[in-house]
Amino acid sequence: MSDTETSQPPSRPEEAGTGSRFRLPDIYVILFVFIALAAISTHFLPASQYNRVQLENGRTAIDAESFRYVEADPVGIVEFMTAIPRGLADASVVVFFTFIIGGMFMVIRRTGLIEVAVEKLTRRFAERSVLVVPVLMTTFAVIATLIGTQELSLVYVPVILPLMIALGFDSIVAVGVALCATTAGFTAGVLNPINTGLAQTIAGVPLWSGIWLRVLLFICLLVAGAAYVMRYASRVRADGAASLLADDPEEEEKRRDYLGGTGGPAKSFSSRQIAAGFTALAFFAVMVWGVLAQGWFMTEMSGLFILMGITVGLVAGLTTQQICNGFNAGFREVLVGAMIVGIARAVAVMFEDAQVLDTLTHGLGELVGGFPQSVAAVGMFLSQMGFNFVIPSGSGQALVTMPVMAPLSDIVGVTRQTAILAYQMGDGFSNILFPTSGYFMATLALAGVSWSKWVRFFLPLFAIWAVIGVAFMIFAQVIQWTG
Image (cartoon, rainbow, N blue to C red; front, top):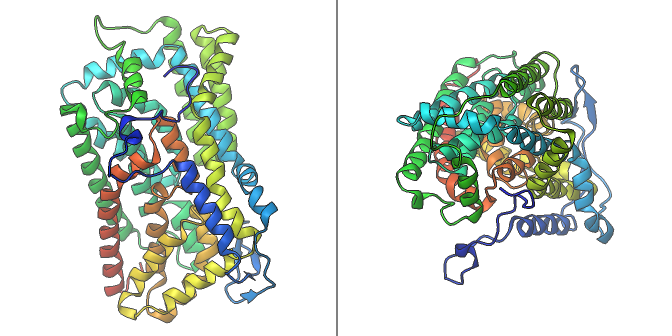
């Protein structure tokens, strides 16, 4: 990919044509329409509030008994006009994390480390390349189900993208490995503090209880996801025309970049590259320690990755000017993805401005309460999935919906453990479908994959996972699962 290009894919033949086949509009258009619809809806939805209470862990949740309507304050022209800038400000942590990831990995690419590593791995896995998919997916899924960091997809994709291209796959395989694996792990939440732990704490359920069913869910989701991605990867390797990116000029450029060094005599690391490689591994070890032991998240990881890019570049022999140029080139490549993160956040900004977010939460509870007892659990799952469009944050959704859903589950004949599982799956699956999910859109941008192409790839797996989810909800309700 050239230094002057961004991650926005150029106009493609199949998108520029005038055939009868339906084309999704650009993601900017889609998000702007969502923002406009959100603003319009505030003129029809009543404003309301829940009181907020402080939990023992310092987080703020709603008081389910305090719901009340307040004076309407629909979004005006000024609020609508400033929604995107304020969305960018609200999502600034993710926006800058995206920039820094892009810059850091461009610096590492310019050290030659990735080129030599890809060449060696390509030779090693040449005859069994598709096995890389389940190995990587299992690793990423286990990490996600233990520490709950779907956002690590932003780190995984730049690392594995060159390898996937060199092995004969495409960028969608790289994205699928990272996003589907982390989503399977995060959704099942075997020991995930961000969704399972927080939801169980709010619902008053013993921490980590019911682990056996979550382990079973984890296995089912991971097996289905890995099999699906492997099937697509095998088809692409056998016939490049089967790739959803077959006519993408940016994809062709990536192939030239990453395949250019895989032919001819075997390459070896220089002594400085070896030292730089060990330095990079040390920084990743520090990142893992920080996330697990110190509770680091995007701000801390962003600072660490800046130091990592500078240090690895210097150790590898790059000049300070080359390092700066590398960061600048990386920033340009992820510009579109970083912008999309903030634009997506503007949808929630509209609802917060008009104080209708609590109205939606209350309506969610009323909707679930109206379901027959026989399908109440499935209704909870589907309702939570719809609500995730507005609040795509796992912890944010738990803090807003679980104080309502936990007591409501007692009334409709669903165990609180089952209500938590409904929230987990309703939040998890759609995190890599809805364009309001910031980290997801940024991950696509890092790989140069458009949202419309991803939707075409992911929708069948989404349907498979949804069927698995419904089956688990029915099973949990039938056995009255408590632990």
